[in-house]
Amino acid sequence: MTRPISLEINGRRYEAVVEPRTLLSDFIRHEVGLTGTNVGCEHGVCGACTVQLDEEPVRSCLMLAVQADGRSVRTVEALAGPDGHLHPLQEAFRETHALQCGFCTPGFLMSLESCLREHQDPDEHQIREALAGNICRCTGYAGIVEAVSLAARRLRARTDGARDSTQQARETDA
Amino acid sequence: MKPAPFEYDAPTKLEEALALLARHGEDAKVLAGGQSLVPLLNFRLARPARLIDVNRVAGLGGLRRRDGVLRIGALTRAAALERSRVVSLHWPLLREAVRLSGHPQIRSRGTVGGSVAHADPASELPAVLTALEARFHLHSMRGTRTLRAEELFLGFLSTALEPDELLVEIEVPPLPPCTGTAIVEHARTHGDFAVGGAAVVLTIGPPGRCERAAIVLLAAGPAPRRAAAAEASLEGRPANAKNLREAAGLAAAEVEAPFDREFRRALACELAERALTKAAARAKEAA
Image (tube, rainbow over all chains, first blue to last red; front, side):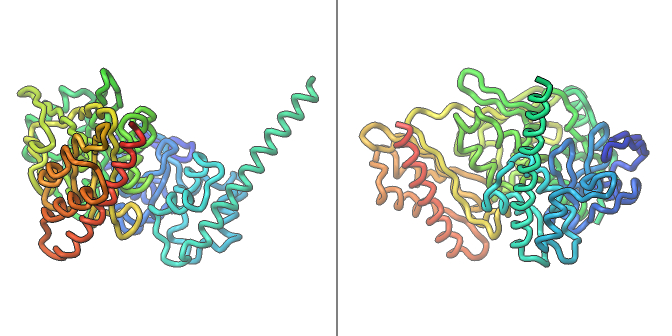
């Protein structure tokens, strides 16, 4: 028994016919060919396969692809700009050595990017709570915590900057 | 690993879901948030012939407070409970419990009804719903029935839900005035399964006397259960440190554990005392 599904991944529509037992993680990697999402434990413990479903972080290994029918998925490939420019969170990860082997990194990024949308100025406790659902065997997490606060600072500066320039634009109009 | 093949239905109406359960209930599993079921499928520890996915059933989600009573649709995500202002204002114990349960990536999918139907004795929601004296509405083609926690939770991962029944709604009564609540647990890492814990609802009258107590220990036996002897020891007595400690000891004495019993009882005693102390302080603040 197979089923037709239609979903959006990173802003692009995909139509496919899948077996109901196909996990969303496998669909993303094998059917769509987006291999940035890694599969670690495949039972919801390690967080490597975290993607965003309608902007909320979810374990893609704990969802069936058929359940994503009609929904919108974001994977790590959506973070960098079309010109290859890294997302501020990715930049911060690179600068603060928040990764070594990199296997867990896509999951961390998708969890933390969603957290940064909810908390613009997270303290260390909030950051550690936000990353508790992702396991990293290399870094010891210190670099990751640093990366998140650095990225949060830069994102805040960017929105403040954007606000300033809108303000300026408005004043110029007037 | 990957799940074994199964037939799959995704009904959009409650009647449709109940008809499917009536027809296939014995061989089918209900799929809600999937945060406990899908790992079991991936490991092939569960190989149901059919999954009835209730995620698209209209009207199964949603939180409503009417006449002081909270109605939680079974498909309400843990994250929705965590974010609800009504819940944090009137039933802070539910929010406190959800925040100990898994991680944001789990709570975004995991449902209240799923956690209840899975009935893990180490799980937070079954324990706090037991302490809050929640009532559980089960529907089937044969009709509906409402159970109390004591009637619903039968044993380890086992409930009174018949194969053709679906948990549809959970009703939580209002807390009386001058009531404090708390849940305290110990887990190896944040968001992991609790090794031990205690959920407490405590009503303290004007002279500082305990009017009503509900104490439920986590991971203390096959099913979440009220610690009756400990609760009775507090009723009508001052909620002071000595009496709270004594109640914690009585609750911990009921811990059933096949191994590490001494450790688990000591842990339960300490955690119950902390939860009771917190709840008592909050009850006095509320007064």
